[in-house]
Structure formats: structure tokens, C-alpha cells
Amino acid sequence: MFCEWGSVRKQFPEFQRVFAELESKVIEKCNADWAPRTLGYLAPGANQYGRTSILPPLFKDNTGTQMVTWRQYFSSSGHQTLLAGVRTGNVIPEDFKIAWIGLAFPNKQLQISEIKWQIGDRKYGRIDLEELRVYEKPAVIFEEGFIIDEEQSFELYGYVEQPDYQRIIMLGACYYKNIDKVLGNPGSAI
Image (cartoon, rainbow, N blue to C red; front, top):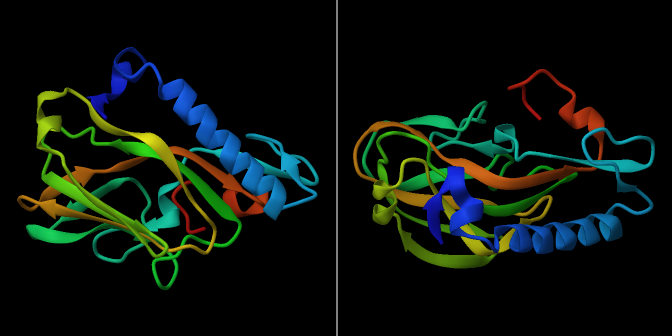
């Protein structure tokens, strides 16, 4: 579903339901994998795991560099990796699970015209993004979200039309087993 991120609830009223279902699934998975820990949300206590926004340092950019922000520079056009898990083999770090519901592209100029991705050994088909050019703050919201598990590979590929800066923001939530891994300085490595 393509939409205006600023009014996603108006244009995609099922967003709340879809995200609640995704969150329920990832919490169930966290409870099973990280037992006896329970969800402590933003400030987990002892024997709890936490929840925050999806953090850029969990990914590397098109150059293979760990991200600090969602903004990156594409120095060439054509098909290329847009985002990938930060660890060797494009893997998400241990003790992190991601509930991924979509992507936002807040640039005035959208330089990416098509995307596709792979989570683990499952590949997903191509999505043409050119329709997004008619939106002020475009976003792609999935009809069903995805769980990107800890130590699972993730790659997002796309077609870049011309070299330029581009923000590609992962929408959803990140769950972490140990709060110490997210207490570093903003923008620091995880």
C-alpha cells in the first residue's frame, strides 16, 4: 500500500490492526526465545526485554558501512544494495528482533524507482515505487508485516535512478534482549 506517511491512519485505516498483529507475533516470539524475560517496553527492568524504534546501526548502507542515520549517499545509478544487516553475511545482530511494517522516503526527490528484498532464504518480489512521487511524504506500508529475527540475514535492493542523497527509513519496532546494547551514545555502533 502506497500512502502519505503523515496521514497513514486516514489512508490506511487497517494500519493499527496490522501493526498490532505484527507486534503480537514478535512479542510472542521474544517471550519464547528470551524466556523468562518479559516485555518492559522503553525502560525494561531486571528480567525484561525492551522495545524501541528500528535503529539505523543495525544496518549497513550501500557502501557496506554501518549506518548512523537513515540518510545515505548513492554515488552511482542502477541496481544495488540499499540496506543490509550490519553483521557478516548481512545478518541482524544477536539479541535484536525487528517488526518491519514498511518504508518511508521523506526526501523531496525520490531517486529509487523499484525495490525488492530478502529475509533469510526467502526472496520477495519487486515493487515499483514511481507512484510514490505524487506524495508529499511517501511511504510503503505492508499489508502484513515481517519479523526479521536475530542472526537472520536481511537485504533490501533497489534501482537508483541517479546519484544523490536518499533517506530510506525502516518503519516498525525493534526489540532488544539486553538494554546495555542500546545505552551507547546515539549513532554509535551496536
